[in-house]
Length: 296
Ligand SMILES: [Zn+2]
Ligand SMILES: [Zn+2]
Image (cartoon, rainbow, N blue to C red):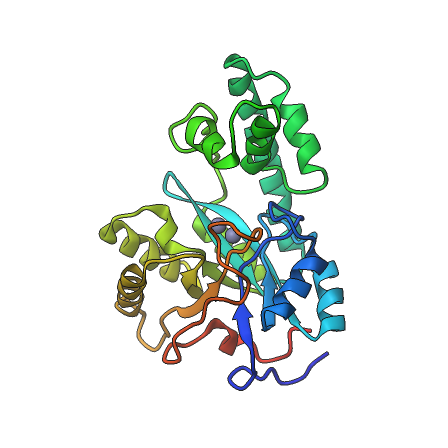
């Protein structure tokens, strides 16, 4: 189990952010690993929303196919009044801290789902909760399941329209959740032995000043790395993001945040990128340099 991890010398692509059927992806963990292998990925983190339920299957597939699997999770968190996502990499899936983090978010997701369903019901869409739950099955219940239900019932043409009309920001199903704070989320990831990574900083629609505040607060709260690249990004914004991260205030003797990356793959032919299709520039410190030993 313990072998020196070839942090600088391994061949192939790295993808440290993707989703399986354990949350809102459409491939099973094993299918996902197999697809990653096909696309040249040699180091893959499975980071399902608020669950580690897919990790064991991904690890087994990774062992068979020769893909190193990093156990991960994408935790919903709160920064001020805003929801943000924190990826935990290299976490111990059986740790108390992860169980606690997952259970708390499950409770909050159920509360949110009930409220979304109540609001949709008032709009005349009855049966949303039962419908979304049955679509979710064993997966983490989320708004995408309500979107799929609205499509299946013929209320909207596709999931994108479901968000635009009913579930997105400012719409009837936009129920705010009081997720655990940024600092508590980072602390839970550390308690599970992992590294905390700020997911897709450019996707929150923040001004440059607000984005800098988020990055600084994340770093000051102990955050380890920032996703420089995640899914589709504008290269100009990516450059600006790097300038912001490199310019953060860092305590004397401490290091600034490392960098991470991922496709945020959920399913083929969607706005997310293909597995293994994003690459960090050679001159940044990658998060995987923090890993002393083999993740498998
Ligand atoms: Zn996310
Ligand atoms: Zn994601």
